[in-house]
Image (cartoon, rainbow, N blue to C red; front, top):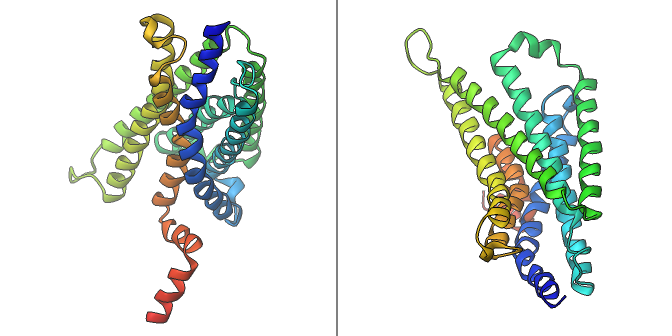
Length: 273
């Protein structure tokens, strides 16, 4: 019982970096992405509907993890330490990224098929399925079932496999040069974008997989929790900030974010001009 208490108390410090760093950074970025996408005409007919739902999931994660952490400080038990927020982050996030990767793969490698699948109801239906699966994963985590991390491990591993396969096929297709044996500038930009997305997804989601495997099959230093747990969950949670920032950089919307954050600076600039 004493070891269990120590382990639970250690979670306070292992989760602290995530709670202290991620929500303040991720909430403004995701709020701007949601604002921009909701104001964009025809959003439901494009693949950006997945980006919108991913931003909603990241916002949900930031708010939930903050509320659950505060409650955990008042009542530090293994039950309250099993955050529903991890289900949103490790369930809904990878599933939506998987849909985005499949959507990009069909768009790049099978454009004719992509045109046939542009019906908004299809994407909305897929998002609804993701919401249902995410709710089931959150319930699995909260009820503290013994095999819950095995289920999440399989889910994340499968998602990474699908995302990586789609990205590799997209990169292979974009790498094909034109008639003059030179890569088109648009293809070059798309290649860099897909490559960076591929690397980021693997960095964010391979960390909890590594942490879980070390906890289960590594030395006793990693079980049940260790400093690597803190690092793994922080890296994983930072995806909630990196994903919206990637969208804002890709669509060149970062100036709007600076304008929303610093209206006084914007006024001074206008007056100077």
